[in-house]
Every structure is written in C-alpha cells, then in structure tokens.
Length: 138
Image (tube, rainbow, N blue to C red; front, side):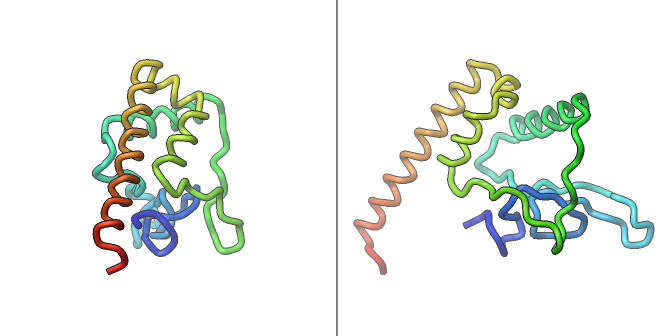
C-alpha cells in the first residue's frame, strides 16, 4: 500500500506546511520561515509525469482564474479533507466525473487514457487472483 495514513503520502485531500502526512506539502526554511518548495506526493512511477504536471498546473491556473479560495491548511483542529480514492478504479471514476480535467486532456486522450487504465485495473485484479490461487496464504 503506497497511499494512506502512515505512508507519508496522505490519505485525504489536504495540504500543509512541514507535515509529511499530507499529499501536498509546503516546505519552509527553518531560519526565514519562508516557503522554499512544494512536494506533491501522489504521483509514482506508474504515472505519466507530463500528464501529472499538466493536470496540476491546469487545475492551479483554473483556480486562480476563477478566484477560488485555498482550502484551510490541514491541522489537528480542522477536519480532514475528503478521502483520496483507494484504488485505480476509484481514481478513474473520479476522473470520469471531472469535466475540467477531461476538457484539459481532450476527448481523444481522455478516452484512450481511461480505456488503457481500466484494462490495467482488470489485469492487475486477475493477476492478484492467479497469484492467490497459485500460492494461497503462504
């Protein structure tokens, strides 16, 4: 399991400064207390880095263009954001409902991307079943 509580990637839609348990972490210089860099921890080696960056930048620019307010920083006294999807299928379901991201990808790329990832999810599921049948609970 790569995403979830205790994995240093986060388990909810949140951001914070110097908190390794959120998916978007703003790092702060200890002396100046100024932001030095931002870490996005949900992309891994299975992601297309060009699509990841395009989606992050597009969503940020859209938020600025529309004058959206930044959600409050995660803290102990503020309820956690919505939970992150727990599987590839859940992630794809969220993408299918996100008209903005689908418009950024365009109809051809979004259709192809979703089809390929759905095939991967089915293949991963059947592979897990085969391994379980072959090796059981050893």
